Amino acid sequence: MGCREGCGGLVAVYRGKFPDAISALEQAVAAQAAEVSMPWRLPARILLAKAYSALGRAEEAERVFADSAEHAGPHLALHSPQMMVAKSWHAAAKGMDRRAVELTRAAADLAHQAGQYAVEAEALHHAARFGDRTVTQRLAALTEKVRGRMVTLQARHAAAVAAADAVALDAVSSELEAAGLILSAADSAAQAAPLHDRAGQRRKSAESSARALKLAAQCGGATTPAIRCAARPLPVTSREREIAALVADGLSNREIAERLTVSVRTVEGHIYRACIKLDVTDRDELAKIVGKDIKK
Image (cartoon, rainbow, N blue to C red; front, side, top):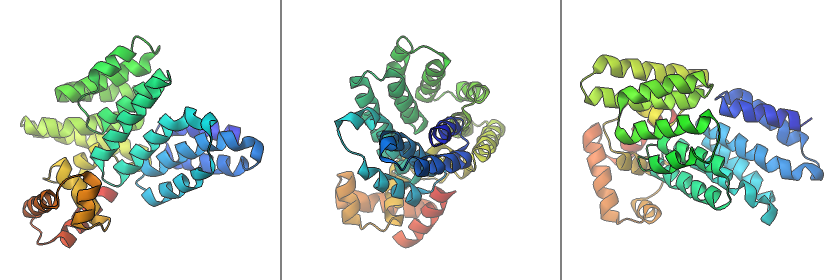
């Protein structure tokens, strides 16, 4: 008891079956309450936080992260890259897309230093799914170190993101779906949608968007930056969206500036431009619109 549920939860997370994953992992954590099982509770909690975040349930993920504070010691450093990946998903769930990318890249660096090349590839793939166009070469190099089809698909996805190649993204989406990586497939299709639209291919854009939403529904209604964009492409930049998300979290302009290490005037400029684009009059209305968009 506990190990079985944990393994089931692991498979469910990677297949995008997040409601099933949450059920199994909550049982696993409860069953592994004995002290002898403590080392196994941390991996289960990492997966659980990721599953909650994928469904946009950021507060419940925060609870899991808080519970994880009981795990400490150098012997647990093995799990640090995966913990950072889970935190990147939490950042994405809160609309902090740039922070999500930063965390995935940091996780990849940690994994590389530890010789965890498969984990490094996974983290870099998450970065690409969050919109990072700079990880292609690293992922391509990892295809020489990590056996199996997974890293090859991840590298191809990243290359399509970097090239802004809508056709390639649609093709990779189909391959990811066939491999059972449903949410990755949804992200790839979602990333293709706005590229088709910019090329004037409205029908293809609609098809990619519909495919992304259909796949996301199979994942329990999972939400990611790419899927949110495909579902409701607000006419704001990623930076404007990120700042608006922090406004929705209740942060002042000064607090946002400190969080993002920019000037207050820069924050005010982004808020002003986002308000103009969305035809709202103040930061409170902006927070309502972007807050709803993040939760979709």
